[in-house]
Amino acid sequence: MLLVKLFGAKWRLVLSVLFICALILELGYCQKDAQEHRTTPGRKPKPTKPKLGGKATNKGPRAVTAKPKVKATPAAKGQTLLTQVLNKGKFKKLGETLSVQAGGTLELRCKGKPVQWGVPSYLEEDDDGRLRIVQHERYGVLTLVNSTGADTGEYTCYPMYCEDTDCRKEYDKAVKVFVFFPDPQELFVPSSDYYEVIQLRTNWPTLLPCQVTSPEAKVTLHREFPPAEVAVDGAEISFNVRRGFTIHRPRPHHAGALYCVASLGNLRQSSTKYMLIYVNYPMAPPAPVIQASSSSVALGENLHVSCTVMGEQDVVVDFTWEYPGQQIGRPPYTQESVRPDGGGGAARQQSQSVLLVEEVREVDQGTYTCTAQNLQGAKSASTTVKVVAKAKPKKP
Image 1: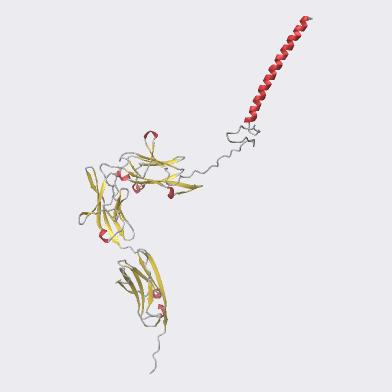
Image 2: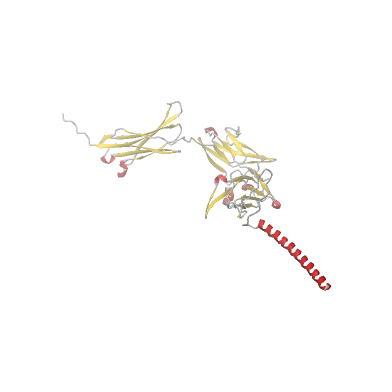
């Protein structure tokens, strides 16, 4: 009997231990489940502890709004998009100019998808397979190998704006760099022309593109006849190493044969010769005034129709006529003249063309139109002439 009681007590102890273990496991699972409630989406979280100076909230999970996808567009003008690729994957931000020794390799990278490149005209015409342009997913690469002094010039990256398959250059966002390729044998960018004719327009600055291959070259301007160095004062004439010499206000004394001389170290060379031709360019198209000798002319009489232009001195004006007699092949007879006009103080001139119609016929009735033209454009003026029967002589 005692044995049975001892055996029963032992089992009660075992059962008690098992019950306690089960209770501990259950508490563990509950804790884990509570953690899952805090981290599983869609379940209400417990109130969070307030930050310093803040308040506890219990408004449910905060909605996270995905950032809208924005179509990649080139950066605004002035932002550095263009870099030079150096050895070992290094990149160099570029300024306005860059120098690469002739014979070396130029590699430029421009961000954008896609981009287009602008290169000096020499390379556009014939690059001998030395120029390579590749478009990657997010940038374009221009590579020029075996460079020469003739490659000197402006290199431009144009970001493209695309809609479906239609793309166009964004000129206002273009990024440019002027690249010099210093050549120990060539100080000037080579040219196939011995003479280059340039107009000296009175209303527009004139550029003499004496482009050098090295920005360190010293460049001067010279006149061929009589031999002399031309003064460059920065106001009337200025020099830019990327562009050449600019004559800001061309005058007749600037005309003639000019050339540039560059020197660097012990090397001194002359450029192409520039033949400057002075053209007094008008400020505006002519304004013709037309007048007939009579608005009504009798059959058999003579008719004069004049077309007059008041304008700047030494500006050539060309006249052309349209008149009724053209339909029967009547040839035009005109007289043209130019004379100075001192009225108003400024040096001006009067240009005139007079159309002569002898022995007027009925076919000469109609509209007469004069067109005056100069280098700025053309304008016309018209008048109408009526042909009437010849008056009968009165009886004595």
